[in-house]
Image 1 (cartoon, rainbow over the protein chains, first blue to last red):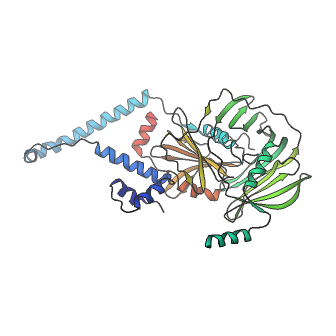
Image 2: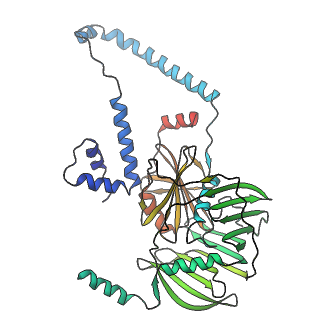
Image 3: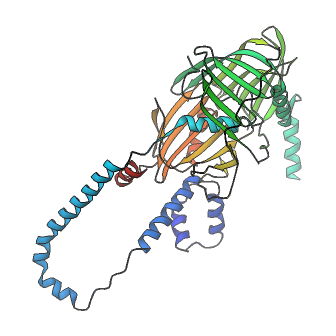
Length: 137
Length: 307
């Protein structure tokens, strides 16, 4: 089975039929790519469903039509103000928050090296040589 | 009946000197029990150029120590679940892990291809064949059982890595056990959700680990080659990496003598792969892992601010 993205969407909608579900689940067990797709789709659906539902009051549309010109004139002001507020928040946060520390590959090498030493194939042919390069000429 | 017939065909076609891979386990077990000092040359022809190293090796009591012949104060100690990189006696990086999984059944046919003379000593050559493809040639010293040379190959028969001793002394160096008692041992666990698949392009996931800060990794093996895949909350810094494209994804890649490292970004953080598998297998392995994806400008801003 190649990466069945259309089946993942159908699975979330409960639209799979026959043995499609079992086939998809067994594929997901061996495919990190499709598991990541599933997780992402699920998170998007959850986010969309968590949005509040607004009900329009009766008669709003005719009244809104009467004020359409003033509302459009004010929109630019409000959008600009919102953008400025967001920029200000980001600027302040970037000043007060220390930058995140990226992970060094040394941390990964040591763990891989430690686990590889328990491998039955562990030998001088499998000792993990660090990325640091100090062991290389 | 058809199955029986095919089994008969397989055993008929198998060379008389070939054996299934339990013999590989025995050979490697003997090699681990050997005690010696040696000098080893490692040379790997990678897609990004040749990587090589010359190291001094001491092996005793199941532990291997490698010391750089260039920077004599840099040392790697490895064995029994521990790995330490030290310089001038100070530890730079170390880890200690446990394992709960049974080793994977090796997928290789081991073919005994005869005697040879290596560094003036009697030795035996064995080839490891998987799915009809020669993947490795190993040379074991007759007297000690030590693995004195190993060459690995890509699927089209090109040499990937060659590690061979250029000097060998069978005297026991008497290594003391690596002092890792102050390092917390990482225990395997499967009690968390992960995007790391149970099998990847013919490699089985043997152990899953998660530390106290949510740093996860899985160890994969096919009985000879192995690699680890890491899920990290932030991106991984890989110095001097080259950007390569597989499918629609961009990956940062770096080779050392014997090891390939890939790091990439996903929507939820970073991933990394470290292993000794030949380059022709890299794309197939990466294709079944969570893909490289641009997280988008908003996520980048968020991560750069808050991690």
